[in-house]
Image 1: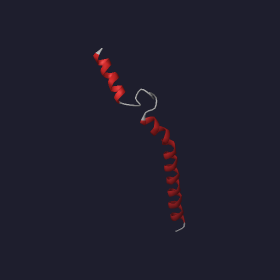
Image 2: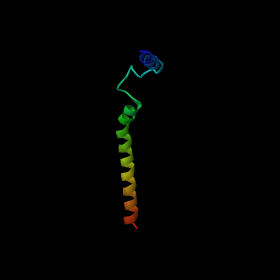
Image 3: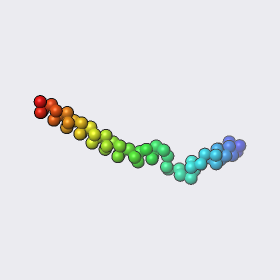
Image 4: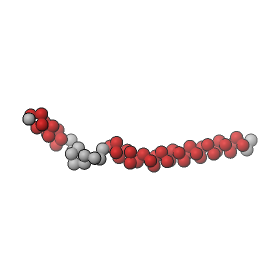
Length: 58
């Protein structure tokens, strides 16, 4: 019983834990992940194209 009361007190001290149970920092990062990976892929493709152009134009 006392452990449950302590857990409830901790929950009140940490805001946002029980208000949004399915929104965690990891979920937010995962939501922003595809854009970052797409950007990295585009940059890598551009770099590869530039390197190939430099190699073939010599």
